[in-house]
Structures are given as structure tokens and as C-alpha cells.
Image (cartoon, rainbow, N blue to C red; front, side):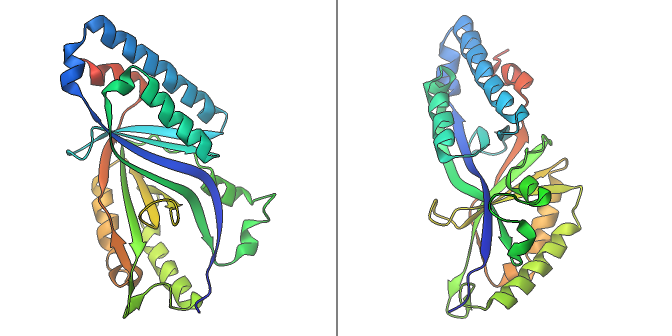
Length: 250
């Protein structure tokens, strides 16, 4: 039996996409809309305080295309906190207009082919800690997609030996390094948590870089032979002070 690799795990992650009910939003008064926006802005301030204290992170994106209107990404220490955030959104007045479209639950992970480099459970190395508990960059664009490894007779990722997997992932990582400064990524594991096995969240100033990095990585053997992908969700960053403008009807 192939040997499983060791992972070190960090914050829990929730990708929550919503359709916005513009028809109902237009039917209420301007005063009601303004109150709903102000209430939601107060909710965002709470999230910002958590981020300032480095106890979690969040970002909101306007989704391009019709898969959703908004994508919320939350990173927190526990799943309980993620559920509380989802409930707070749903209980808000604005939440009445936010219709669930798709969600993805996962946990930030790093695969440690040499676990000694991570440190022990009580004291992670600074590099590893930053990767496992990151503050998401407030860059202009984000792209999220889930993925899994194939388990076919001639291409079963879980039957090849650890050394071969390490080599393939190293080569894959070298491709990614070409995009340092252009693309940042957060890898989350979702085996046992959601229908895919991993989630990938990419951030960039220029969305063209998403196309370039994913295309180039398709030629790495670890992808060509062993990877399966779900839907890609692409969004443009929505800052807190832009929310009112996004929801304005005039």
C-alpha cells in the first residue's frame, strides 16, 4: 500500500457564493435599502477587527458570469466560527436578498514531505505558520476551483509511491514559482469535508495570469495524468467602502 504523506493544517475555510435578488431589492424603499447596507457594513467591521487581530481573514468578490453575484471567502480557526458567520449573514436584512448559490468547506493544508521542517504541533516555524494562517491579499481578482486526483486503473494517484508523488509535485511547484509576485495561492484540503479533495484559491492583479498559470500547469504530469477539476469561479474584489455603490440603484 502506498504511504500517505503528512499534512500540517491551519485555518478552516468557507467559500460562500450568493445570487443577489435584485428584483426584490428594487421593490423596497430607499430608506430600507440604506438601513440594510449600514447593518451589513457593521458586520463587515466585525470581520475586519478579526483580521486586524490576525485571528482570521475575509474577502468579498463580485463574481464575473452567472454562477453567482457575490463570493465571500472566510478563514477562521474553527468550523464553529464559519457557521456563525454564515448564520449572521442569513439573519441580516441584506441576507434576505442573498440567495445561496454554491459553497465549499475545507481546511488550509501544507503537504510536508519532510515533516521536521514544519516544527512540532505546539510551535510551527514562522514560514509554515504564515502559510497556514494567512491574511488574504486584497488584490483585484480571485479565482477559486475545486479539484481531485484520479483513481483510474492506469492513473491512480493513491497507488503510486511517495517518492514519485514528491517528484511530480516538486516539478509542479517549480512551474508555479514562475508566477511569484503575479499570483498568490491558498491550498485547502477538503477530503471528508466536501465533494472534491482540494480547493485552490488564486489571487492576482491581472486575471490573465489565472489563464496563464493554469494553462501552463496543465502540461505538468501531475495534472495531465492525475488531475480532475470542478467549476472555476472568477471574481473582482469588492472593498467594504464599495458595497453601497455596488448595491445602489442610481
